[in-house]
Image 1 (cartoon, rainbow, N blue to C red):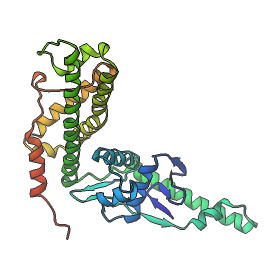
Image 2: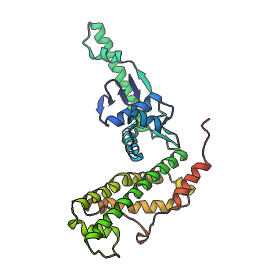
Image 3: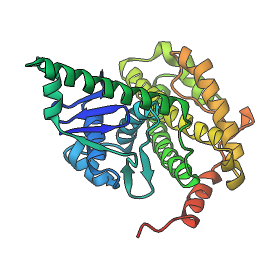
Image 4: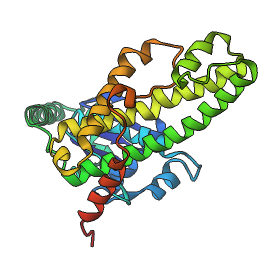
Length: 304
């Protein structure tokens, strides 16, 4: 079955995605998830159905699902399309989806049997070209509709949940590495975690480097993507600061965190942790998580 959504064509028989006729490679899991959303559009697809259909019941982390969704969003949003997160339910594509009969495509690619067929083919291609050009100018000269506050806070809540889970897992790895180093070295207890691991990086053994790499992966992966997403949501939706008392503190914290990541962490292989706290003048406002959840609860709309 072939589907058309905006500038994209999905060929589910060959598991291929095209944009303006050009192949787009997004990976097998991302394609299956996109095809599932398109097939059910505009209905909401539950996370359980996603896990059953895309990962065939395999146990995967929320971060794996989030990264897969983010990969698809990156492609679609460049063409003015969106994947919506539906609070406590799942995901959906509300954009118009058309079903295309594959027979017409194969006929266009075959050699014309007569001059009449050649003229018809040229006319079809001309009409198709006009359609593609119209779509191009529409999507590139019209701003993407702004997200509703409900969508913004739903995305924020999800991203903060991912960041929190990653942070907790990273703490466990951090403590494990600290114990391994304390067994071999008499380290200064006044050293911060960042400084401690930086100082002993060159003296770490294979096991310690393995744990170090896992800690760094959390910073480079879910924590970076989640923090950047939350910051973008706040910067692009100024009303968030008016709605959530701690939002401005969160924004200041994330600005320093993201800047420190790109200016320091990314260029320093001896760092695996990235902390921004009181000493930076912008500690993480812990109350913001509850404030976002409370806002969503008080603004929850009925789906009946």
